Length: 277
Ligand SMILES: Nc1ncnc2c1ncn2[C@@H]1O[C@H](COP(=O)(O)OP(=O)(O)OP(=O)(O)O)[C@@H](O)[C@H]1O
Ligand SMILES: [Mg+2]
Image (cartoon, rainbow, N blue to C red; front, side):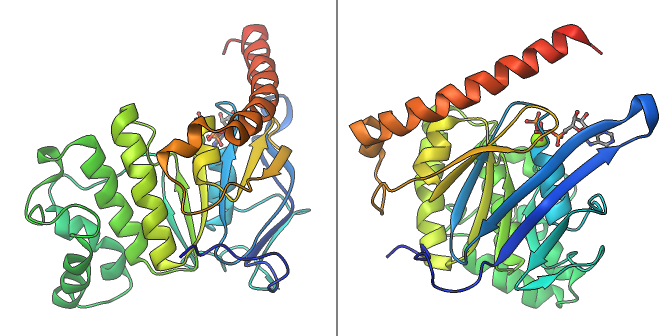
């Protein structure tokens, strides 16, 4: 059973209104994100794609409450406009790097957020241990991060993110470092987990196939200043199997998205050529 919210079944979980972020002052100012408007319904899986440096991680940092947006924009969460600082802790967030602590076992890495929330260690470990089989990590609880493969490390970081039980999950290129085969296994696995846990997910990727395969909607960010240049609802039926990626419907969505992404990537390349620093 899919957790997809049907249109019109209530107010969005989160709304970004004219969201922007400038870094620095005067001649050194960088407008990383500008005028982003976007809404996510409860249970929706939205993928975000765009050239490197287009402001995707900056956008995530604002949604997670780690970075204050420029004053003219806002984040509305569960119908309430959020003041700076209020969002912190309301969203679970997997940053672009897995950030596992090398001196902690895998199990103790998984419980970091629960410990910060004040849960007793024994209780936190029990909760985490229960998820290890579902995340394909049974038997690895007492290993250290350096003893795991890249895919396994990503799953530990994902357990940690899922254990921090918030309605909205932000995943910043969680499969970026994986080979194609492991990546496709992880994508199908993530869709199963999402359907089972019924969370709302915003997922950054550089991979168009991944964005289409996973998303209810794909949003494309423009080159800097990053804004939502294009978005498309993905009507491919769920549950999705690997074969869907070779269907005619998939190819025609990909063709449209590729045109927008390539245009933006070329622009960002031109910008880098003009000012290589
Ligand atoms: N703390 C900061 N101070 C100054 N500039 C920043 C800061 N964080 C990000 N930037 C700039 O904002 C722009 C957007 O960066 P961001 O990391 O959001 O891009 P991205 O789309 O996530 O890129 P990638 O796909 O490579 O991860 C870049 O030009 C970056 O140099
Ligand atoms: Mg990034």
